[in-house]
Every structure is written in structure tokens, then in C-alpha cells.
Image (cartoon, rainbow, N blue to C red):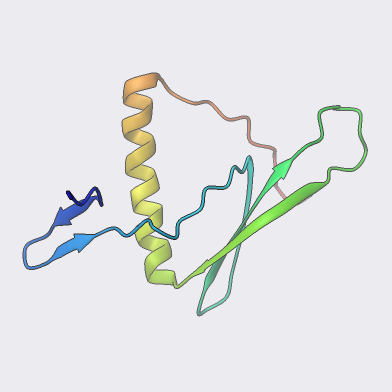
Length: 102
């Protein structure tokens, strides 16, 4: 039987990605917080569809906690992934709210 697990080779090591216990969760909201020792990502779903609602309720489903070194690698990986995505599919323009203190 052939092993269907994705593999990568580096200079000195072979990496085998074991997805046997992986689960998939959809999220359209992510929040990030950090301390000196860790960076925490909270993922959830915004199910509010009416702009007139006064309160947004985000149903949180997952929290992933990583160390700052892994967070830095993740930031680089996401930057490169989004650059490739936008090269293929076009630039994503986000309207960012003004968060300047008044």
C-alpha cells in the first residue's frame, strides 16, 4: 500500500506531515493576543447578517497557542502565501477602520 502522507525534504531531514488526527474548522473571524512567552489565535464565526444589529456575537470554535518564534515563521508564511494568492487572483483591498486614538 502506498503512503499518501505529504512529505518534504530539507537539506538534512525528511518531514512527514501526519494528518491522521487533523480536523477542519471554518472561521471567518480571527483575533490574536500575546504575552512574552506565547501568541494565541482565537478563531470563530460571525453569524450576524444584519448591519443594523447593535451587538456582534462571534461564536469561538478554536484557540491555537504558539511560541513567538513559530508566530514569526507563521507571519512570514502568510505574507508569502498572500503575495502568491494576489499574484494569481488579484489584489485584495481591505477597508481598515481608523484606530487612531483621539
